[in-house]
Image 1 (cartoon, rainbow, N blue to C red):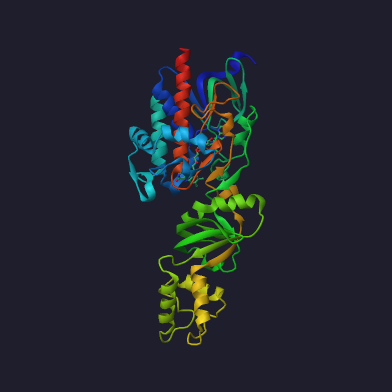
Image 2 (cartoon, protein in one colour):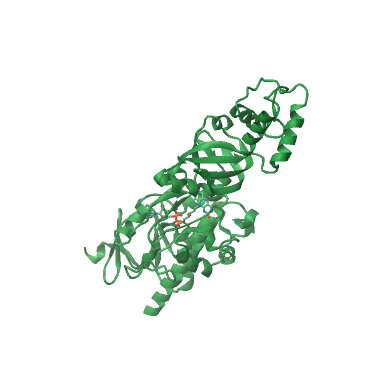
Length: 421
Ligand SMILES: Cc1cc2nc3c(=O)[nH]c(=O)nc-3n(C[C@H](O)[C@H](O)[C@H](O)COP(=O)(O)OP(=O)(O)OC[C@H]3O[C@@H](n4cnc5c(N)ncnc54)[C@H](O)[C@@H]3O)c2cc1C
């Protein structure tokens, strides 16, 4: 290939214009003078997934970030996380014009609650610093030569001295997630761990749940495998036509996704529909209600639970909604209380990568230096963000990983560039 076949040769090319790639271009350009940097993005525009974060409000970090909020290779992740704390994330976003605020459970958001504004500010800063953003440029292949990398895209070839791969994971294909994200690194000799969805909705037997479609409850949910509790969380649950969604379910869905890899044994979701009340108080409340005149079983839980939830509980306990309440035995009352405190649904699996917010697993971190994010296999090749085998809990931890790992990689690239000049 003639040298003229290459588009402008860059010092640094970042593959993938998502959270990590956009931030990295700013980190690099701010620390260097006269260095040429470009982002190659396969989609028609950068930051598509970022726009969808936090339901469009962008939960960009979390003040309670510790390595314990992460999965995959924690000892690898802690270097980047400790070198770029959530305070630094807020400082960085302030510096590009995004004012931040802390909400429940340490979650950090832009004050304007608008992911679009976060993306706009990142892109404005990039442009002001002179980083190039090249869209519709899917990188199909990266070839490492002695002096530089050659990157093949559908529209031509690019070259760079340093390459930072920020291609994300395969979660949410409608927002750009793809298994191809890993291919570039595996074709350069890297290996990939098993992938599975995380922060994802859960499919269950819908015999009773279907009737609750669209209802949100503040409840407590546990996933029990062969009777053993694997994960438990209190918060909002959304009943859907396929099963369960909502923040509390998404938060602990990893347990279901891990089970789904082999599907051995039985997994059950157990929901406490009234965690504010203990068993004894609930029984007292039920006795009081049953003594109220003129109520049928269809009304007896109204005022304690949402009407449709109460009626579903009664039906799942085996009672008809028209039945009069006087004939109930102590055993019946206990059965209803149990249905409220332990409303069960058999788990079938997750909604897969299509519904997932993040990919668990990724490119093996053992092949990267945790203090620089540089490949141990290919010199001058770096990676950051979700493409690596690190994923966080729900609550801003995944974006914090994207910023922190991008920052560490950028610092190392700049240091290496400066050593050359
Ligand atoms: C619906 C939803 C809501 C979420 N909400 C939150 C939240 O509120 N808080 C939080 O912390 N996390 C959230 N996440 C997770 C978070 O968005 C990701 O973990 C984060 O975006 C990962 O950043 P990244 O830069 O590694 O990858 P991405 O942001 O996915 O960016 C990767 C980019 O690389 C591009 N690309 C891939 N392959 C190629 C190629 N071969 N050539 C060129 N370009 C390529 C992709 O098109 C994409 O633009 C959410 C995710 C989803 C799906």
